[in-house]
Amino acid sequence: MVGLSRGGQVTIAALRSLQGPRSRYLLAPRDGLPFFAVEGPRDVQCSLGQVGLSDDGAVIEVVFDNAGGYASRAYLRGPLAEDAAWREVAAVLPRKQFRGFIGESVLSVGGRVVVEQNGGPLRWYDAAAKRWQEVPGSREGWECCASGHGDAVVFSLEGIPERPMAARLGERAHLLRRGPVAGTSPVMIDGARAVWLEGRGRDNNNFYEAIALWTADVVDGPALANARQVLPLPLKTMMTPQFGGGVVAIFMQERADGLMIVRLDPEEQRALRAPVDLVVERVLWITSEEVAVRIGSGEIGGDPGVLRRIPLAALPPWAAK
Image 1 (cartoon, rainbow, N blue to C red):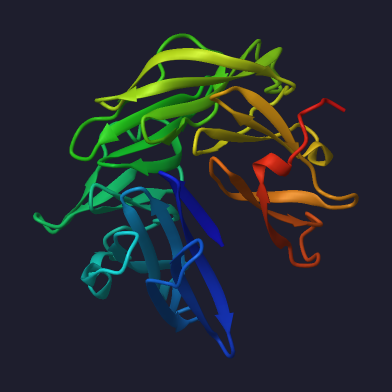
Image 2: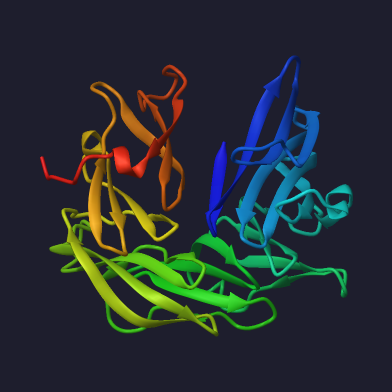
């Protein structure tokens, strides 16, 4: 299960295993009935692949024609609601045309399907030209962590230091965060606001002297304006924050320390820690009122994790252990 919080609305994508070698994707509002479902087999020749959620819509991947470890892919795309667009295949990425393609994620950006290749580049399907186009600048390093926001895609080029990038489809990617920094997390955007972590004093083992939470306004371009530090964090290694409804969730250094939950306006910090012998395995979504997490053992092959929706008001104030 994954979730997306935008403008106070939460959309959930859930993959369900069915009896026999079949599975089903469901797309639904957090507290309502599904608006779309697709069912398929689970075998090497055809199976449901990845799902991607963005404020522009959702994309579901169907993997087929598998041979030699590489497969063709078909993509369904539509808005986050019931719509006729869900009944048509929006794009196909043929195995023979893109040899060696390993997909990292799929996105809906500006009404188009965007695929993220493992390490780069980013590609989007141009329905008018009936061909896949490459995002210029997404090959200039190890590309990762793409997300869609309206008609733009935001991603990071991994290296020392990392380079947060952004591009409108059909345009060349540009730096999203300018200025000399020792290291930065991917930039997370919710509407007209962005957050990220920034570090200084990075050593050869990727430990930092200091890491802080930053925020900025998102303006046309897209670009960041009025960047400012929110607060220093008790971290020595870089984490990727989750962001929604003006609230940030940040995993702490030790798994037992759980999450720091930071509300930007008014600024406050709360703690979310799992019960003894369990850990917060994943943040599913976060809004101005609640955070949804999966809590479990954190061990491969352990008992299945449990989904918890927790009101932010029920969390205690943050206090370092």
